[in-house]
Amino acid sequence: MRVLLYQLNNSDFTFVYQNPKVMNALKGIAGGICPVCGTGKIFNHSPFLSLKPPAMNTSCSHCGHIFEKEAGFFWGAMFVSYAFTVVEIIATILVSRLFLSGEFDTRVVWPVVAVIVLLSTFNYKLSRIVWIYFFAPKKIKA
Figure 1 (cartoon, rainbow, N blue to C red):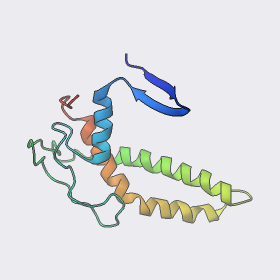
Figure 2: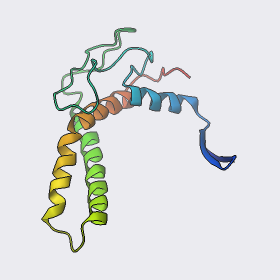
Figure 3: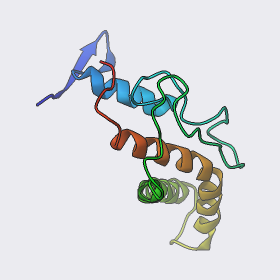
């Protein structure tokens, strides 16, 4: 089993992970690239923080890997998106509590709604990418 290693070099905290496949998968998820070949894009050229719906490619332009395995494949991505949204709501509430004095009230609702709306496209894209990587063939380049 691989373990996380932490090093302290020149007063800088660096993070080292021993498994290059995991690091390449994390880079691929962050970049939105194909989990099989590591070259083709999953989504068309749309920014992560956009309010218009992103267009997803049906297959990889480089290796031909089909992203949607079957009809309804991305239903599971809704649960991933839900988890991201819950984390964002909790983080927004905690940050709002730093700036708002008193008990929990409706003033926290507006920042939460704003975060949900602004990050909706980000959650949509990231949850689908994570879902694709979760079910991708284990051919990620090392």
